[in-house]
Length: 338
Image (cartoon, rainbow, N blue to C red; front, top):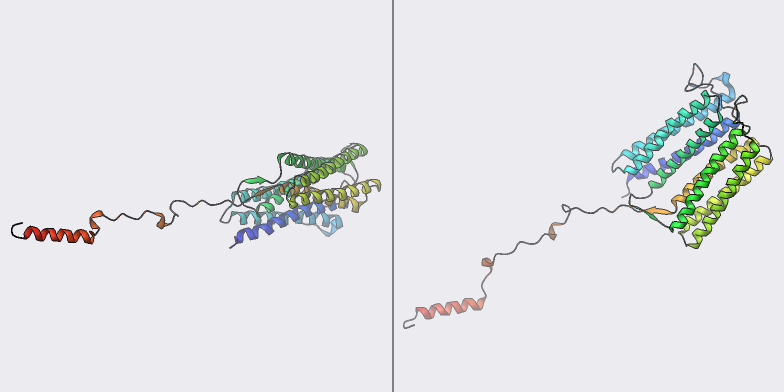
């Protein structure tokens, strides 16, 4: 029968992944609506209240709603950790659940520093990148609940795995470049928030160059997987990644040439999250991990395998012919004149 604990942990891990992705979108909504200082202090929303007030208007509601989602995220992470501790306990799942759980308070602290520094663009960027790290941890936890603890086995040759790693590095570089572009452009989260001072056109061009590199590497990876006859799931993951990247690139170009409308910028933030999740799915599709096989101990060996005790020789009955010969010899010895 399937372990009930793992049956519960898997949907919890998926919920953690979805909630972390949703936090990126709600964080984008805070910035794009100018609600970054809707709660002007931290950890309270105002000097006298932990919650928003009517006087703070819509900006306070949006920022406070984002904070509430962070609390829900912490509760999901705590549930994952508690369930992972139940027996039979798997160390890998406990460590992953713990890492994600510890990242949530760190995310809250960085969010607080963001508010206290008046939406410093570099701190805002760090806030986003930590969300990407938490998404990676939540995705790993979700995938590990569906596999065993046996040694990982590669499903593709080494040179294809190297290409996949380069693609992942390019994907991470695109995210970092996107953070820098965001910090140099409008939509700071508040009309008085400062910007990085970098030239928006220059950093946007560097970002676009990295996007072209990422799409090229992803397409090459798909062709390589087809060439080596990789498992269908691996080729499919690479194809999905290319599709997400093309859609994300299209949104990026349209938003740039239409002067960054709010809805397109929000869609671009969601697309960045999906590109990262697609990258993770591609990497995980290149290996598998079987369930560990338990080796029975000597105590568990069946008793029938032990050698049967030998029968003493003296207990063996004499053959019938030998008994008759002995009786006849005794009769001749007793006869007269023998």
